[in-house]
Image 1 (cartoon, one colour):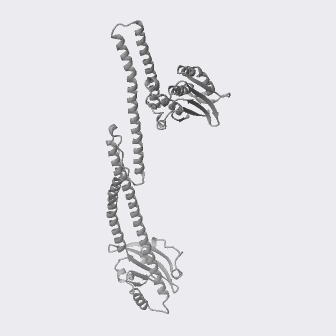
Image 2 (cartoon, rainbow, N blue to C red):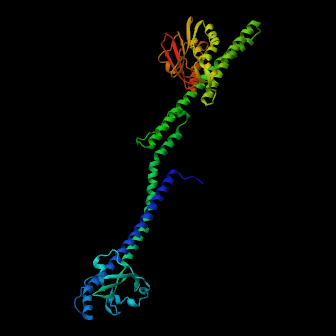
Image 3 (spheres, helix red, strand yellow):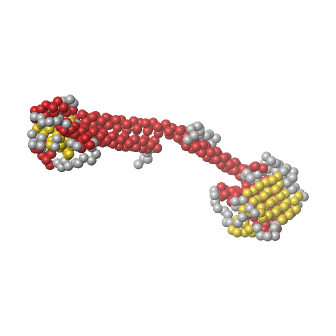
Amino acid sequence: MTPWSIRARLTAWVTTVLGLVLVVLAATTWWTLQESFAEAIDKGLVGRAAAIGRFLDQQSGPASMQEMEDDLREYVTLDPGWNLVRITGADGVSLYQSPAFDATGLPPTGEDPAFQSATPTLEDTGLPATTAAVLREWVFRDVRMKGHPLRMITARVVARKQTYTVDVALPLSELREALDQFRWAVLVLVPCGILAAALGGYWISRRALAPVDRIASTARAITARDLGRRLDVPATGDELQRLTETLNAMLDRLEAAFRETTRFTADASHELRSPISVIRTSAEIALRRDRSVEEYREALAEILRESERTSVLVQDLLTLTRADAGVDLLQPTPLDLRVLLDDLRGALSTICAQASLDLQIELPDQPVPASGDAAALGRLVRVLIDNAVKYTPAPGKVTLRLASTPNGAVVDVADTGIGISAEDLPRVFDRFYRADKARTRDSGGAGLGLSIAKWIADQHGARIAIESEPGHGCRVSVHLPHA
């Protein structure tokens, strides 16, 4: 199945929810109207029956049937709503029956099976006192007169200590016509409302997702050759603006990473090309003609030196590549930094001696515990010493100092060399970067040492700080946290 788009799902949700709301609202309104109309009609019928009872109760002195019928006829003809009335005495004799009621063809009250089978024993519980005084019990019925629906009440009233049966009816045609009109209005308006909701939901979703389409279109147009292009940020202050800003920040990082990778590849190619070119040139020159053993030995020695440098460079590149890939190369264990540096004393002294530099190692008397990879930390120290040696002319001095602080341990490497300028300090940890442009590969290296040292420090949660002033040496401090 093909998944629906967000626009289609939003439209479907809006249409469904609003459609359900309209249907429930229409059904509730129709039911409420029907109940309200029915209750109003029933209350009106009770009121009319009670009014007739009060009228009968207010008659004074004896009166003939003809006089009472005349009085009733005069009373009910005052209001057109009284055209469906029948009053019967206790003896079953009709006192008054309106002509319209007579035309209904309904049987007399006492003979109506519907009334006889009903249980009209509803005692008054909330009617006014004037109504309760005359109205004893009643029953409602739905009847039809010549095909027209009627709502009728048959009530027992007591007037002048006599019981009368009062039948009052009201037509339901107008009520049902109003309900039918409302129903037809609902049947027309609800579908129109649902259609309007669908169209409105589609328009709103299209308008709301238009920036997303523009973002997607722009993102598809960005290629490796056009990483400098950015998405237009809408000044809406909503989620779309934050999304666009986040995507632009991601593109910034991708562009920086791509440029770094491109530069790294170009620098690595350049660094590898030089030793390979030297090796090839040395071999070609040695093979052009017959040479003495010493000349062959010199050529082979040159090839060996360049091969060793190439091997170191390849190893450094491999280390950085694995570091970028997130490969776990370190195995941290508890160790004593004082013992670690003391074990490096011989190798470091040899490096400094070959450069005619004085090496001073200052270690505390107490153990300095730490947690880390001993080989990696040893390499970090050798990188710092090697870097100090390369940029310190003879005769000079290199100092390696270890100190314990409340926050951890500090390894300091200070030299009396040429120092680093202020503009070069922020970039000394970049790959293939050499602060002294006058240095050659033989004296300055490939520019990967400090990058590797920074990575090792980061893996141990350490911080490297450099203090330097041109012509007055350099000091590199590595702050290691407690074990």
